[in-house]
Length: 583
Image 1 (cartoon, rainbow, N blue to C red):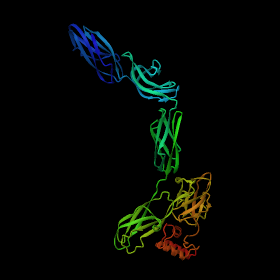
Image 2: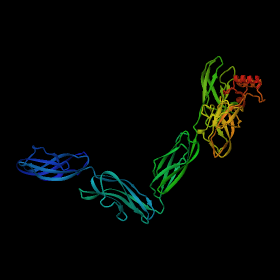
Image 3: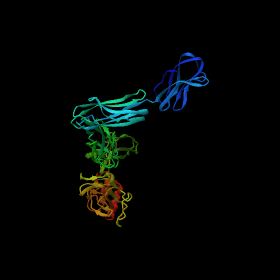
Image 4: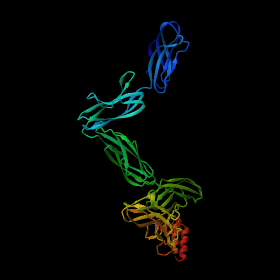
């Protein structure tokens, strides 16, 4: 007979475990016996003593330990059976028992509640739970009030769970007129084997009764950011709880310029925490100051703050190169070269730092380069190069160590601060035909072989505004300006060798035309401004080419009749030929 049975009531899935059967026996003769584990689910013995090797005789106590393996899940419904042989197998005794596979659990994953509420107000407590039950199990989830020693909310009778999963319970509570509610979220389940209810988990919490509404504030740092087009801007958004506010807040941003996007991480965010806002821009995002509104929303509460995003254009860097000629008969070493925006003798501005050419052979050349930031430098400039500025090199001629050249940074500007030019849609070109300008309606007498073009997209107050347009090639009064596509002639003024000024009308707040500049019949080269081209003008051009006659930008542009950006002996020859033809 079975005296006692030892086994684990709960095991892990696929675990090997032992069942020990303690027996008492009494046999007159040596008798074959069998001790086995019957599995009701499988309808077979899943473990047992060897047959027919096991025998007993006389009287005594014997224990048998059997090894079993748990299935992946469920409840093993088993029976420990004692059998003996007397012409046939006889069941002497048995003991039914169950082994549960997996640990019973019912736990709180998260508890959400308002730390403070108004008197007599109804509020919610949300209990997120995880559970694991081998079989359908009766459970209870409730809110215990320590002040009144009772459950003030809970699940209904006969609530059950089974398997593995998670579930959420939401309880509606009503606040008293005053004080502090000392509460506990309790989780219970009924244990069949112990035939009693077990408190599986609990979480204590307090709710303050306050006459002030829970609230939060929102701030952003820094208050202003400046980035280049295509670069991101980062802000830190901070929330601060007031009167016990403890709910998720969803963040949004508005006022973003075209092409910009905003991303919060994390979002939503719990009060008294921070979220990082990343504003991503494109290379075409409009420049300027943009005010962004950042809002935090939680239920019926909305709080806002504002930041400034200043987007600047990408820096444009030009490389200026100079070739230095050593016309002497000895090698030169450590040749120092300086670059200037304007004549260094009359206040020219240094560009970069000194450049050193380690060696220039006799009758040879050396090269020097410097980077020049031309961002927002639309206009024409005279660039000077100065060699051996401190006279450290012994030379036969100290008067040929400086040269200059006029260059232009193309673009469009407007002196009216209320006019905004969209740089992404505004351009200047020396090949409008090749760049796709519509010239299908061009007059028959217009020569399109040497033309300039520009298009402007701008916004601002209605009315006439002055725009300056700088080209990379020289322009003179001997051009005609047309507005496309109607080819309407527009007056302009030449205000520099590369720049014209045009008065254009903004209508409906928008300007979006295209223009083309066509050479008229005639030639520049009147350098002494006497109204005609004479050999005297050719002499002036030759002096400029030789570097012996520094001139203002307008004279340099007028002398560059070849349009190659330099004044050379070729320009003097062209002017002389024009003078001989009486032009």
